[in-house]
Amino acid sequence: MKSVLSILKVFCTLLVVSVFVDFIKRLHKIFYYLFNGGERSLVFNMQIPDNWPDGVYHFLSIISLILIVYMVLLTVDFRQVIFNFSKDDVFTTENSKRLRRVGKGLIIYGVVVLGFKIILGLAIDGNSSLSTSSDPAYNGGYVLGYTVGTSISKMLPIFAMALFIQFISFIVGKGNVLKQENDLTI
Image (cartoon, rainbow, N blue to C red; front, side):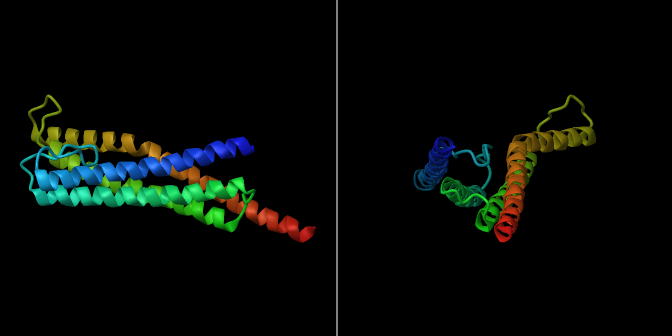
C-alpha cells in the first residue's frame, strides 16, 4: 500500500507542476500577443475571431488564467489529502473537508467552463449552417443543440470526477465517525 501511495504522491506532484506550467504557457502567450501582436491563442479551446475586439479576448484570457489558478489550488488541496493518506491519516475530518472542497471546486470549475463554452460556441458558430435546412428556426435550434451537446460531452469527465471525489469525501467522513465511535468503545 505504501508503494501505491508513493506513486500517487509523485503523480499528484506532477499534476500540480503540469497545471502550473500550463498557466505559465498561457500567461506567456497572452503577454506575447499583448506586446507583439500576431495570432490569438485558443481560449476555452476555441479560436476567438480576429474581428472581435481585443478587450473581449483579454477578458476571456484573464478568466481562463483565473480558472487555471483555481485548478492549481484544487490540485494542491488534493495533493495534501494524498500526503495525509500516506501518513496513515485516512479517516480524518480534515481529509473529508478537503475532498469535499475539491469536489465542489471541480463542479464550480465545470459549470463555469461549460457556460463559457456554450456562450462562445453560440457566438462564434451561431451563424454557421451546420444543418442542411434553409429554415432559420430549425437551423438555430440545431446549432443550439449541437453546441450544448458537444460542450456537455467534453465537460462530462470533469463532472464525473467531481461526483466521484464527493462520494469518496462522504466515505472518508463516515469512516471518521466510525473510527471515533470505535475509539470510544475501546
